[in-house]
Length: 389
Image (cartoon, rainbow, N blue to C red; front, side, top):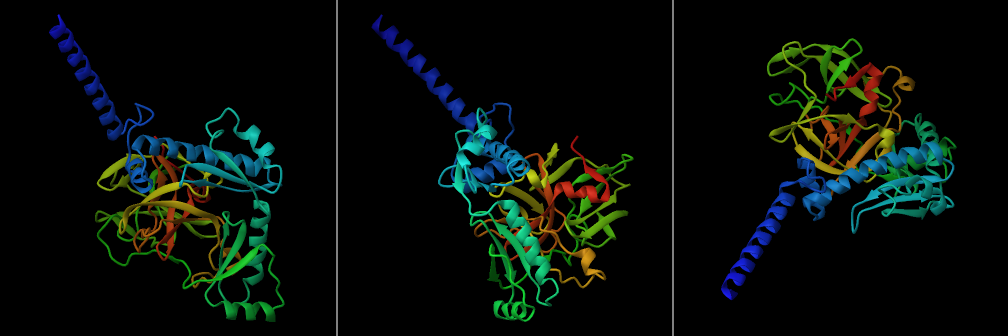
């Protein structure tokens, strides 16, 4: 009887250990917190970058979408005191929100009983975000006629506007001569170079030049693909011409689209050696500083990083613009950074930026290893919509 009892116990323990092993394998293969959720390259990349499990990566990538929705709500409802929002990934995962006053009481009705209730953190901001946006516009307009280029962005972490110039001494001298005083929220920083459009001079991958973006359709249902507006209008894919329809490269926009009569257009993107369906889009207002996003470009391939600025404004110096006032860039460009990772090279222009199955934007240009993209909702400037089914 004792031997039988021990045998039964061993059998029970064996089954239990097998069950634990199966659960562990299930977590590694990517069932995550939702057993029905498919693991993507984004999940694995996030898990590797931040040293967490794939399940935790899936949870966090889902929560950053909630953070984007919260940001959009605060811009709409609390503009007078909202100082900005960002997603913090280390040392722990948090959504940080700044307010000029009454942060705790202001945030509570926006997050209570929701997924962010236990991870949101409020801080005091000296200036409201809408003031920074306004001051950024004032600063860029003030310096646009000085003959010394400038780019700008909003650093929500430091709650300030940053103006980027190539030679600070020359810039300061030009300001003084023009009797221009910048808003107190603006910090002028000297940089080695301005951003520049990515246009590959080599062919052979993806489009003949640049990278295709997303499958789209116009109001009549005609389908096609996007790429960056600054790329050539005459493009080929796989040796076949794809007719140019419409495009724009100014203000908040760097996008064009082409029909593809010799191909079947799908709502998919290339991610490494695989493809992925795009099932939704996320507008600029619902994208947060700190969000972990990924892109695919034909030169640098699949890379990921964090949004560090969603109010970047490029210099107005444009050799292809006959009417600078009409071409002036808007402070709507989204900048992505990842320490030690080159996110952009020539030829990547037009490629898709995304998070899992959601379209975030169209790749536009680079600055060093950093990348910039146009938020996906700006494709409506040329009357197209992204295919999501």
